[in-house]
Amino acid sequence: MDVFLDTFLNAEVLAQYAPSILQGALVTVLLSLLIVVFGVAFGAALACLRSYRLPGVGAVIVIFADVFRALPPLVLILLIFFGLPNIGVVLSAPVVLFLVLSLVLGAFAEEIVWAGITATPKGQWEAARSTGLSFTQALIWVVLPQAMRMVIPPLTNRAIAITKMTALGMVIGVPDILGQASTAQSFSANASPLTLAAIAYVVLFLPFVIASRWLEARFARPVR
Amino acid sequence: MDAIIQQFFNLEVMGKALPLVIQGLLMTVLICSVVIPLGFLGGLLAALGSVSRRPALRWFCIVFVDLFRALPPLVLLIFIYAGLPFAGLRLSPFAAVVLGFFLNNSAYFAEILRAGLLSVPKGQSEAARSTGMTGLQTLVWVTLPQAVRNVLPDLLSNGVEIVKLTSIASVVSLGEMLHAAGLVRSLTYNASPLVLAAGIYLALLWPAIRLIARFERRIAS
Image (cartoon, rainbow over all chains, first blue to last red; front, side, top):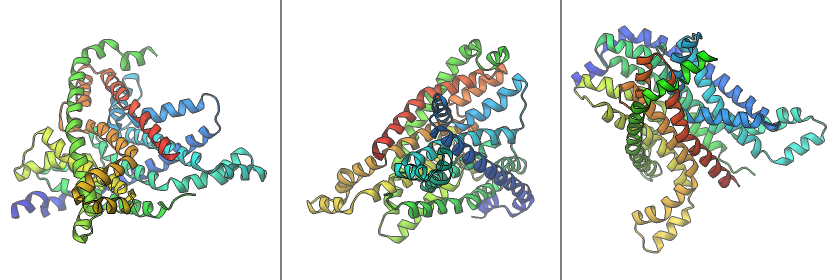
């Protein structure tokens, strides 16, 4: 038991590296917030754009969403981080991580919000238009709010899944929780920083996982 | 424009990378064929536990599921691969990937299967039991087939997520497809091998994503 504690929860090592892991937590939280805000906004904007059914636009959006849902995010991260400098575009590691995960979340959010828009009863559109609202007004004030409400549970689940992927930033040297912890682990030759990192992730994400369970139960009422 | 073609779509470099990338693809397929069935089984057990009438078992399964849904899979994998050796447990990259994916995938499959099991009306299992079937027979022949059918799109899209997730095995230097492509990239200083790998992932997963969309539409209508 002592050996176990010494290896995985060594007080000395923990005290030494807790500040840098805390700093990493700040990076993880900031990146996650930015990714959720931009990803969801981008996805919702694409879904709205798609609802105008302009020729060609829908196809482009669907192809974008399919490609970014089919490719592993780590492939995109490596491709952009190592590929772009060869053609003269140098982006820092956190920027690459933010870009890739926002686009990936945007792709998923577009599909989810679009499903919500198409599931909104036709009568809502017709009623809104008959009161004199333009198509855009009807979309923004009547259809989108109902669509977003309907898709909160899948959107929350997806947002959690994508923000957890900020840990992938370690591979390109983003100083997030995992990045700081694996540096600390190699310096201290002790597994405690990794334990601390795992605890930090659970503390950060568990409330959202539990909240998503609650949301699912709450919104599970049959839609009529 | 020429620079982009030279750096990202260089056929010569892709040609050189191809044998290694194909070898990596085989490893990716091998990982998937081990971790998807294992994760499904683990998820089924956890799902059954989480709808059990025994509170202790139910809570244990719910905590297990939520814990591993909150923990990023890469953190879990690195903990297993780089952390456990300090306690004297040194796993091969493949074993570490299988263990990490088993824990992670079980949690996700459990959540999906739980929703599936709850979607089957109680009358189904009551009717099955009243015909003299045992509890296990009822599960295998009556409840589970309906549960799986009801959540089929979610199960399939979780499968797609797992195939994508195998790319993180490259971090513990298991020679799957991304690892192979990354290796050739670092030797040639050219991103084309990564584009090649991306193309193969697309060719494999795009049809799956379309298929899932079609299932979802059919269930919605």
